[in-house]
Image (tube, rainbow, N blue to C red; front, side, top):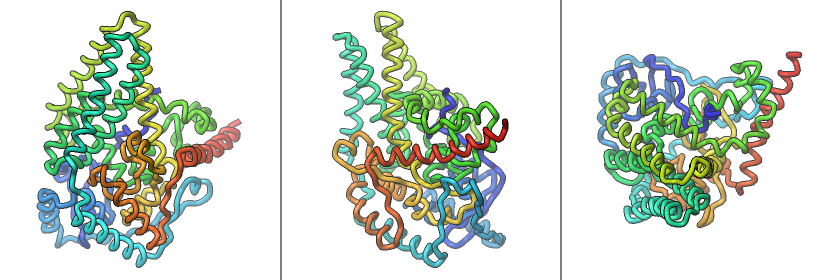
Length: 452
């Protein structure tokens, strides 16, 4: 059941050389560049695609990234390839759950240009500036929750209540690590990394770099088949009809019911991420990318210390029944609190094929494939700001506390450019996600019936 893989999916990566187009020029990316890329496999996401906006969105004013780009442009200027951006045509059942991007190229270019202006305006207006006091408070909150859970466990024997509080603390730490990995807290990436190891590996058992490896790819190519690993949920779930061609007969027997058991398996998400983190961190010394081999020295001891503390906490409990109850309640609570958020924003929206033209239009891709949750003070806190998921995907390095402030600007941008801005209550978004899994389940049932 740990193969239930949402969000902590490390996809298979093609490491053959390729081209990406930035600022109107194709640059060649060879194996040496890939291995040295500080962002791991995220650079491969735009293989043979226009990547100007996504490059500048991810790297902002990074001096190091600018030096890299200048060097690659110089090396590639005399050998420009002839690569055409052709949209993939889907037919029949393959169209199920898939979106269309049928605006003219002229309109698409105009939207991209206006988005770049909006992004630069927001940076000039200070929306990328961090409130360090705010982030200090958000770090202290879950630590105090864990302290309260330990206090209730040790001095009042309130094991169930303590487990629930600890699960909530882990969820809140998940949002905090996520922001560190997006370089939101400090200007210096080194300090963001250190804080992510503390709040991720040490306090909750999640690999910071394992998260980055899959999550940056997800941000770059949201809901694009074959590029966004978050869509690869087999064998227990198929997000699109094409997945059905990849499954064995026994899996096909399960998939007609996937929309029914989807919600019941959400609490297992944390256990899945924990196992994925252990696997990733153990393999870091031999990873393809230089950055992960170098950072193994931080993650391996801190992740080990996390599990030592977990085992010691369980050891202090009176019997095995209490230990098992506490472990399951805390882990499953944390899992559900994470999963009900991270599965809402994208599984309820359309997907696009590998070579979709929309991949070359970063703002349209992010807005078409993302759904916001209606905000409120409580939801803003519980969801870690990810109810402003559209804004977060458009401006991933923007601090969480500024996302509500830019939401009206984004809504106006969408309205002016005739782009759908999706925002719903939780039940509506959840049902739309169930509907998408149900669409594929119907096809799975038909194909299963044809086998007999």
